[in-house]
Image 1 (tube, helix red, strand yellow):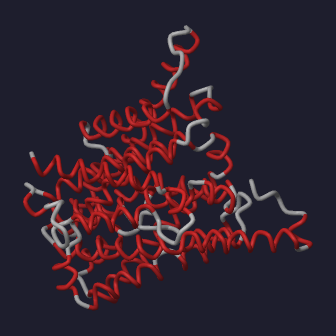
Image 2 (cartoon, helix red, strand yellow; image 1 turned 60 degrees about the vertical axis):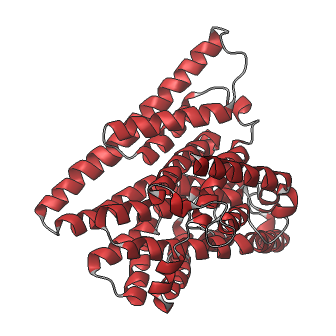
Image 3 (cartoon, helix red, strand yellow; image 1 turned 90 degrees about the vertical axis):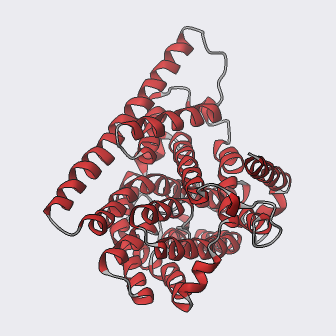
Length: 423
């Protein structure tokens, strides 16, 4: 019990300290997830020993469940916070990124795993699938805040948010196919199991169940408003409650809770009429500070240093290859067809800032538990750590460069006739 108290105290202090210093941090080259990870490393068993995760019972399961909960709250917040008009306007680019984009990133990430680590085919495909999703937690730290709102147009911030919110649940499709192949072999039974248990029950049922939950909450809230039963409500409390209900409810019927949570948030967003009241609260900032930071603290305390050493230079090569191969070529290819007013500079920004994070942590620990292959956790966690560092230290620079490119474009003859940057 003392270990739990220590973890709560340290995580709470990290939230408080980073909250008090959020202004200077936003203006620095360090991101909040990166600092939370570094604080977890400092408090962990490798340095100060205040957060002695080695003494916990099943510490990796604790991190896995913390990641699962964090993802559910984060994707629900994204779906609720995004204006309904953005959901319609950005449907084309988001759907392209969730289909062709995810398949391309899966393939390129798998190539990186094969080149660097030389694993068997199924393990290569599984590791590639683990690092494919764009992380909503890390992405939120990039697209939220005063600096992002000043430098990045709504179309870009909303596209990255929506993509990262939806593709974590859809990543379940990609992860489960090679995982089932490893545990059961490549045969007709595996394919049938994937189609029924994963596609039908895991994904389609999750979307339907989550949408029903969100619609029910939106309808209940609207009727309570009309009856004068609700004086005011908090978007943060609704986000947490809805995400927990969707996450646990989907789990009870064998569906993917993360995808159900996103669907629930989207359905609630579409059904509620008081959008102007909901948008007054900066729910993403609150979620980032209160719910998302502790999982990075835990991650920093549980970095598998011995596993990284066992991978050698091949592990570092995999992480660097994933950063270079996974996303930039995909957006270079898909950028011209995204539509919705997204321009070349938007595709360049999206091509770099598609960070890995909590989703990869969750899927890697799940895959390790199911297959017993520790290399999956070691390699994926190293890729996540490199992503947290690389995308964390380049976020401010990336926004400044985007701002300059937008100003230069606006001064050009073509730019004067283009839509405004807020679109």
